Length: 134
Figure (spheres, one colour):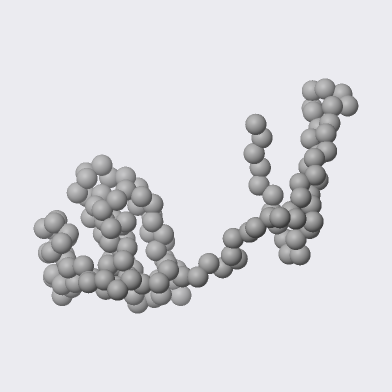
């Protein structure tokens, strides 16, 4: 089995030709045409996920006293809409998560929730938080 990725550029060509040549057998080669005539590509720029109308998650719903004290000491009693939307994936699951949000939307709280989850589990897996700097 052979797998590879072929980049596609605009304008899209009608087809590509894949040429397979053996490095072990003399004159053993084959040319395969791959047609893009009926190819359906995903949208180039997917629209952002709409925020759902949800009740804000309260800090006391964390069930982790140290985390609750941390947020309450900063005067945070409930999370904003973006943190509330991502709460279940970030704090209650082990899945990888990408959260893209504008500056000033308390996105750091999402990273903190992932850190608090790992502290509770005591397995100390890796958490990578990347943020742009101006």
